[in-house]
Length: 391
Ligand code: ADP
Ligand code: MG
Image (tube, helix red, strand yellow):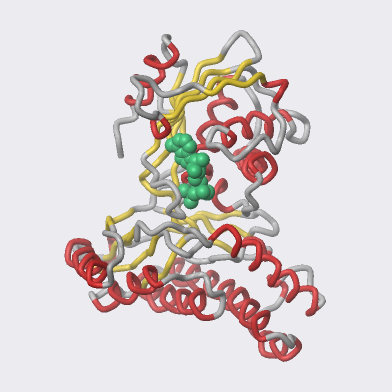
């Protein structure tokens, strides 16, 4: 993690005055439960040690001024993007600052209204951007919590997550579920967050990995997720069609014991594969939670690998790089491995005996070099805490 103080220094340099405070919100990896959130299903993300920091100070006027260390350009100071809060409106574009403007807009439009005021905001993040680790939710949640605290808003973490999601869905225009924002705001150290995306009930599930001599490794394939955007919409449509044909509100409503009968009702082979992924993936989330609750983290490995096969063959959202990273991790001694996030590139999560990061990372790098793929990066990841005020 980069030094959080750099965000305070950056703020001072850009805005010529000290920030009033510093907030941090993590990216996340999803242990299991992929593409289940838009089917009202279950997810099990955990917060990463990488986070977005927002250094923020209130203003006397109506303006929002935003700068980011990751969008600093070549000049001596990061450029500042300014907007009057009264002028905030969805559909203003998908530039990075829309994620920040969108949060202010969503707070204004939250049920009951959670209006903040003008503010100067400086961002600095070490969440890899565009790797499926939710750098976008990290930014949104750091800003949401900062505005909440500075302007004395009284919202629950779940309400803040909902506002942050609306920023992304309605303001920026990227259709995503609530998982990323809930993970960023609600996770606790050493735990994954078991979230029912229908009821929004959430429970912390202990990840007793080090006691079992295990660790999670994250392999960032460093391959772009170019197809992810359009495929996401297609998969959503496939799932909606499957649910409609089966006469259920969402695929969540098909139990694993009803799967065969449901598949027999679906005429189109593609729709059948999509439904099979979602139904079995929900069951895998429940199985992993049961195993973790029973203190048997080593037993989740095969469930993770089965999840990858389902994403690869039934949901068809993997890529050659993701498959190669999974296969090489397993051949190097991982107990289980799967792509995590939206797919078509991004990252792989592997459950491995502690100490395997070096050799496994080298094996994946060698395999990638032989296949002419970009150099991947492998690091151990532990379940971190959710968004917090640092200063
Ligand atoms: P992911 O959330 O998986 O990393 P997304 O495409 O959802 O990928 O979000 C990435 C976008 O979020 C970036 O293109 C940028 O607009 C915004 N973003 C993320 N981190 C930062 C940052 N540190 N500074 C500015 N914008 C950021
Ligand atoms: Mg994102």
